[in-house]
Image 1 (cartoon, rainbow, N blue to C red):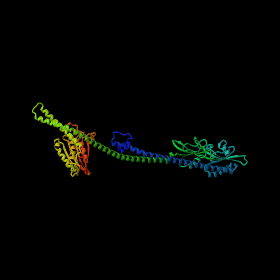
Image 2 (image 1 turned 90 degrees about the horizontal axis):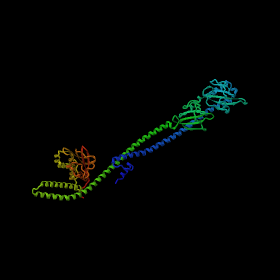
Image 3 (image 1 turned 90 degrees about the vertical axis):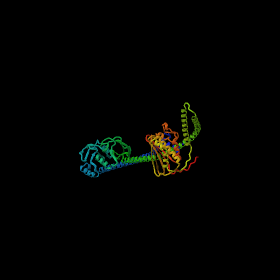
Image 4 (image 1 turned 135 degrees about the vertical axis):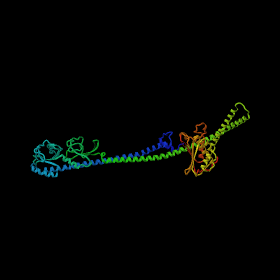
Length: 579
């Protein structure tokens, strides 16, 4: 039955679809990848959401701040222009109210007034007095405009209609962009109407706007009702250029978002009171601001660093958990394998005992009858084929002997032999075993190399069963190396246990067979003369486990095999009985 841990592991590995034939290491790798992805997703998604919300919130706040700054800048600039023009209009109106037409048409008087006017309003270029027919009667300024007729000029008629009028920027007779502030007045008797006009170059407006432009403003300019530029624009051209689609739809400042050269622009538009002009202020959009770009890049860098840290931690945690689960899984598999092997040995042992008992009876009868026939043959005289009968009986008795040996081993494998524990020196036990096989090794020219650690600690064990263990392994090694082979035996203490290693330079055991060598009736010997019963290593394995030890095997095809038998210094075992 699978443990809960195994089921959980399988669910994490394969999402409910187990992969047959995958070992613990492969499952651990799958688990590590799954845990890494899950932990990375579970941490990266909230981190990404928080980063996205932070970007959104900061952009909203920055956008609100940019809009407030744009509105405030446009309102402040608009009020400043209105105040400038208001003072200029008031000054022109004051002069018109303070003097009559006859006084102002005198050039000396007008020049005196212009000088005082110039001190208060440096941007004023000239002053002129124009009668109701549009004829200029007096002029003070740098241009030759005396006697010019302005009856066809739009601003002239507007001045009479509105009393005080600020014109669009136009070229006029001087062929230079300028605008005028005109004030109309009537004589006390109402028979004469005239206009006092102050002119300013358009460059005066450009300088004025440049002086009040906030640092965050990209562009600022004035438009008339027809969409013509009244001042120079940084991006749209000079005076007179038509810019369509920009007008103030209501009083106050309106904001809109536009695209200019693929970049977002925040545009603030507002009418300048008592003028034909519309003020336009353009600023970088929030997505183009340096503050936004810096914040976005820093947050992206922080997100990347956090993601790398999360990935590193997730990888370490996933590897730690996967390794622990793999170790537990391998231990579980080893325990299940050992339990299965023990159960198999027990089952086969009971079967072997029954088989051995059943076979021994007919073998005894066959042996007795063969002996009787041998006696009768010896008592008989010569007859044809006597030698063949003699050889056949010898072969029969040899086969009976071999069968008895097999049944004896089967019974030994199945029977629980009594263990008698006493202090044992492994070096002495190994030497005694080598004494049994020394002549056989000499006959086959097999070199035995010993490396026995002096002063090896004693262990509590059964000397007879230890001899059986070592003898089985050495006999297998001799069968593996054949003539002129080498068998190395060394003993050593590891502090908590003593170890006996038996190595040979034989052909080795293929990896696919190595895991089965301790199973009953399994043999790697292919030669007919060396074919065994397959019980030697199974019996050895059982004896080692019964004595509280452990046995390990390493083999590489073409380079030989090493068996290591390890016994703890304190086995903790008491003497066993037959039960």
